[in-house]
Image (cartoon, rainbow over all chains, first blue to last red; front, side, top):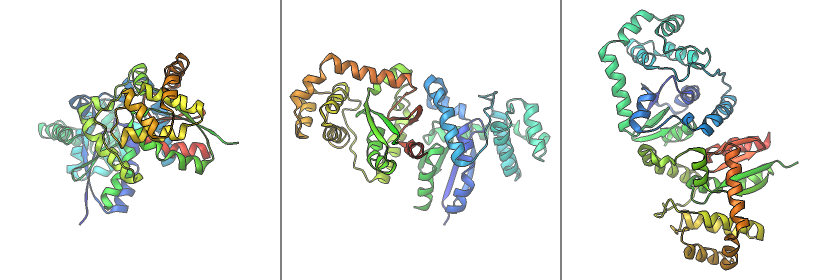
Length: 195
Length: 195
């Protein structure tokens, strides 16, 4: 029976962008059942009492170097988003809507591209809508549904569940009870899925 | 010409213990010139405005799981040291003396074993001395020299240099100006040494 891989992510997170590029092949190799779990990184940080790495100046200086090494390994493009840290709450609610409407792959790819290749301000609803439209999706319908209480509550619930299960950052993966934090733990995720 | 690999470590750091187990083979594969740079992790954290991961409760809960995965991958033993966080200032000064006296390999191995296999309190000078003696070295001579200002100053200088070059934790590696933080970046270190 296929093992379940739960993948908690936020479009605002560059390490989620890195990991996301590797997830499809990992799922293919392991035959895992992938479950996308949009959450809000800011909410996780706050609830866990964690702070963004860039609040330590030396980490902020190191991070671009580290990210560049992963980009080169993965063969990915990247543009630092001048709007960072963007408020992604609407974009993440939209991801939940895209999941329920069966249009997640197009939505998901468009968001990570907009955030980490096209320097878009996803915190601006007009920009967010344009990105959704450009992906061939119905921005009006998605954003209207994203503004409903049921969807807002679902994003809060995902975030609270991740924190309750031990998360303190993004991306965070679960294989059963086993938690794996970070793009740099994907090899352990793969081992867990194969074990 | 062999590239130089500078390796900043502190015996108090479990991720230094993990990395240390891999360094000899990495050096063998790359032909790098390895330079051991003992420093004081507490001093680095303080100067960089960083805080130990375990100060965030969720990170403290995750860390043993993460360490256990690496131990299994590397095939290493480990016992959590009940004296953690030990004050390793004398042990690190001793490492500098062992380097100048040409007895570093025996000293180094004994310290990491004492800290992460034998649960020894390296902050207690009597215990530290016994560990040095058990390694077949002259504890009296090493600790006497370790208490001299020149050695104290050298440890401070290593720590300050690491911070000035961007370090915020341990282990930290440098290949030229390229900094690599953590056991989980050894593959990038190896690429840099081969590149």
